[in-house]
Image (cartoon, rainbow over all chains, first blue to last red; front, side, top):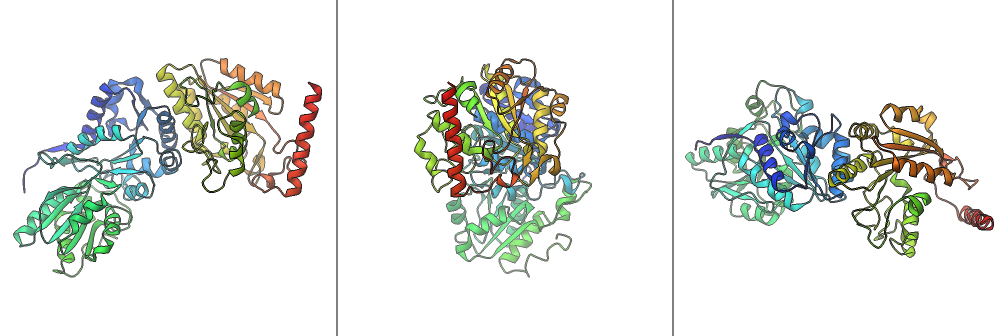
Length: 325
Length: 241
């Protein structure tokens, strides 16, 4: 496996936001008493008049951002993913998505990455909630470089966006690869037998799995789906043509996330599909993010087993992790 | 609504998006019909549109929709969100150095929503004196009186405790309304709220103070009786003039 540098997505987010704010005074930032975690503290320090501490009041924060957007501002709203999407779902729906306002909801510490705090703080269903909303764009970057490339595109697009960020450092896998765009998917590795659609923290694990499978004679294509919605439907179908099986991989519930979205798009191709994700259950406290990823079967070996199941080389992926679900 | 649209709000229907305009957010979005009537009378759209309200394809939806209806500033209808949206508009107004006001009308039943108090706390914390809230204090919500269902008293004391400048008026006395709104416009240093005591369905005996009429349909007889009552009231006002 190639050696990648580790970088933190939240730090990349805070730093990139500051640099964008240097040249665009329409950008404003709201946070719900978590700025040292979401890293908007960098904005508070540099642009105190365009940073709004909203207190522990996410619903007011999101609807206030709608008011700012109605006046031509470009608001970024920050909290943990579970609160940003869950606590303020109705405000996102009514005040932002319905009105097609250019507000970005930034869900920090997404998935299981807030490992110690347990189920109350771990968002396993945030993508599902946001994917159900018309007019919403969902961006799930897989490394810090993606974050840096996504932010200027978000500012430019002026529509409702959900940006999903993990708390943990991730390997920088996109160095020298095509840049993130909001309209397509990126093939990171060629392969003939199977295609793995992965997003966020699972992309690097998909690459690892593909490398391991290669040594066993299975050729796996890896596609990074950083824009989960609107999904590049034609591109996803094109990536699934010619292979014998499909696997999706996400640090999220298999209900309503990447797996659901991709399988809906590929329904006409009659291909076996396996899902690597959290099997319709809540999170739990653990000692590390890595430990929880292993506990829920979100690993490169789990992806490799799902590939074998999709290709009929083993007996189904559903049994792969007895504790999951 | 008459005081706002025909006296208080600085609006120009031919320039509905002028940056200097006053903003008005109808947080109790279920009262959209009266806002539509006022907007049409002010020339934001043709009066004939009123005949198509709540019909398929109409610009006049069941609740305010800023993408479809000229003069509507924000989407409301899910109760409790309007004051937050107004706060955002007021923050932007401060950032941009604007001198306009952001007005927001809330129902008293709507004050059950916790978000209203998050927003009230925030507006006072940021000293948003470019916001004026008006509470339609009719004492009724969908299933009964607010006193019985979820009591909001003591209402003025609550707003005062949250750091707002509070005025209480008779919401049917046009002189009191206009004067309270102008006083609120001039107020500096904190957000201001006008609590307007009203009688729901005022002037229509079958509807007055009748919570069952909150979202009930008028019969044809009631409609014609109401029309006659209103026309008579208008004629009386004209005679006095």
